[in-house]
Amino acid sequence: MSSLSESGLPIEPVYGPSALSGWDPAAKLGEPGAFPFTRGVYPTMYTGKPWTMRQYAGFGTAAESNRRYHQLIDAGTMGLSVAFDLPTQMGYDSDEAIAAGEVGKVGVAIDSVEDMRVLFDDIPLGEVSTSMTINAPGAVLLLMYQLVGEEQGVPSARLTGTIQNDILKEYIARGTYIFPPKPSLRLVSNVFQYCHREVPKWNTISISGYHMAEAGATPAQEIAFTLANGIEYVRAAVASGLDVDDFAPRLSFFFVARTTLLEEIAKFRAARRIWSRVMRDEFGAKNPKSQMLRFHTQTAGVQLMAQQPEVNLVRVALQGLGAVLGGTQSLHTNSFDEAIALPTEKAARLALRTQQVIAYESDVTKTVDPFAGSYAIEAMTDEVETAALELMARVEDYGGAVAGIEAGFQKQEIERSAYQITQEIDSGKRTVVGVNKYTIDVEEPYEPLRVNPAIEAQQAERLAKLRAERDNAAVSKALDAMKRAAGTDAENVLYPMREALAARATGGEVSHALREVWGTFVPADAF
Image (cartoon, rainbow, N blue to C red; front, side, top):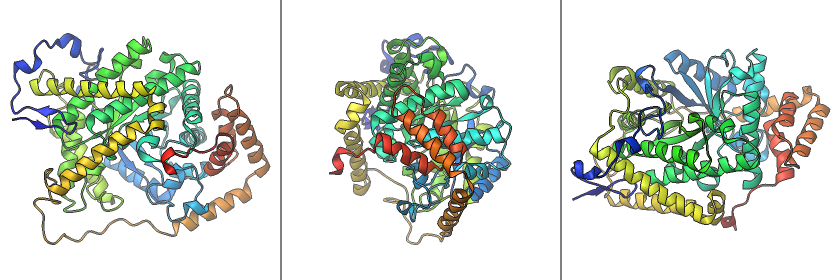
């Protein structure tokens, strides 16, 4: 009797040749580093060097986060990943009333280029790769980073990293949107164009399924809705006049890795195969790099539990292994204590050590795509691919991702899956170790990392000093120029935005100026 995967697909107790009847390895697999990229985007994958080991960090002030980054670099991390606090993500400054109680809580507070300078103090931006989890104000943070790089004497052509810049998934699953979909897509396209000209090694978007998965999406839903969003971004960029092969090589993706190892491996392989065909067949991309689905992976925060938190170390190791066997390009492993509070220094170091054990003590890096040809994995890859394509077709029936979002389709599908998972956990049908099975009566004490509440006042003082010392007339002039550019489709907003930030306009001031022109997005179900 078969059981069901996370996507509701059957998992047979035994797989054999009949599972792959009529299966053509040349069409389904190809070679590593070649179309359709099922076996990975590079011919040698990890046999030459491992994936980029990133650790997502950011809390409190820029100075505190800078100290954590130096600790991670000293521990051997190969790339930084910045978490921003909620006001920064929503385009508000730390001294605004709406930011009260949230400054520095879920990430670092960055109000101006001066904060960005402190965040990367003594970190050579020409040598480190930086990923920034920022969406609606993604252009603002990218330009701040570029300005700090220039101050360090690093040419923009040498800067490497990623901004998430994926606004569509915010409307579906996360909620840190500012502007309506149309101007938001215009801003994304402006970033593509700007980086192609000015920061050519920068990954202009990280199209994210991670947050949809955290909200309850199944693996099939995760890749279907993520790739549908990717199609929408490519269509918008092409409609703005960009050639697909000018920007598509810098697109990247961001997925979750769950503890369900086999389906996760299948999911990553199916996603690569689908995307390569979409880019070749729908958009006519000729550059193989435009057809590659390169992705970052983060282990599943939603599967971490506050009960018996040390068990999370085992969960994260399994999740990280699945990401590697699935062919990720970079990986963040969550800390075992993240279900309780911000990670302590020791917990963050253990999370990084988990990746290092997989990379250097196991043998999974010694051969490319070790599961290729497995009856179970290949059958599951085909099944996940079919399920995802069916969901993508339903999105197209609405008229594309934006129309689906406006109709609430993706959100409703994910909420239905999340409700089912909750019911299964509550009923005991789904085992969660330490929560509904193998529990203990008394939990061991744990001392979480706490954010200093004085941070809010400190940031307000920094902002007051900034506004008193800068040339406010120059700031107003630059913001007015940005608003004029935003009012026409003919100009790229990032150029006047950069001038405003260089004049020390704050992130909140830039976002408010754009709100005046573009308005804000209010979902239909808010009323």
